[in-house]
Amino acid sequence: MNPTISIIVPCYNQAEYLDECLQSVQDQTFKDWECIIVNDGSPDHTEAVSKKWIEKDNRFTYLHKENGGLSSARNAGIEIAKGKWILPLDSDDKIGNQYLELASQKFNDGYTVIYCKAEFFDKVNHPWKLPTYQYQHLLVENLIFCSAFFKKEDWKIVNGYDIHLIYGKEDWDFWLSILDGNNKVLCMDYVGFFYRRKEESMDISINKDKNKINFSLNYIYKKHLKKYLPKDKNAIENFQQQENLKNNLDFYNEKVNKNFITQVLFKLITKLS
Image (cartoon, rainbow, N blue to C red):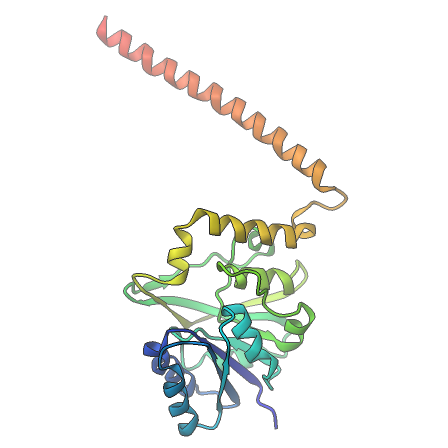
């Protein structure tokens, strides 16, 4: 019988954290799962660590592939997954032992995405305070971390994670792809995801590079343009309206700044006289 949940763990140069990650999977109170460890051409000892877990528990599976990036690795694992529900889990993170059990209780309630509360750990230890999910807010920024549950059939419909997003934001793009304003999304009142915050990581280095950020944001905007444009408007009309609004705001701000400067100068002259 196929497992209910397939956990996908892509690995690249994170072997030192892999044991802790996989231990959090094995500790789950919900037992009907498989865990596919995807070695994305990692040059470290990921394979040795993975094989140890495969020998320990036959619910773990190991897949080796040429390096292709995070989206490619997740897609490769999901492609062979047998579960109806998918849970991505990066190899340096971990999950709470009731995460699968509590989520599984909601699988038949019509949700497209199910996730939970989260915390940072390692170099930083405090709650990860994400805004409450709202679809309109999701269009502006990502509100759902990578380790959320979704159905494999939805992954198939949107052709998986986008491999062109090589500088991050692939999670946000994926949620935008499978969600619209009509989908039900649940954030459970349970701290079940623990995101490792290191002194240096891929997301930290990317956030320091404006060009990489702009590439990802522009790519996502163009890809999901219909979601960003108001109904019955074309892109040119919308651009013109935004430019007019910006010009009006610039004019207003200039007026405010001039008035402020005038007031400051008046006060200085008054004091000096």
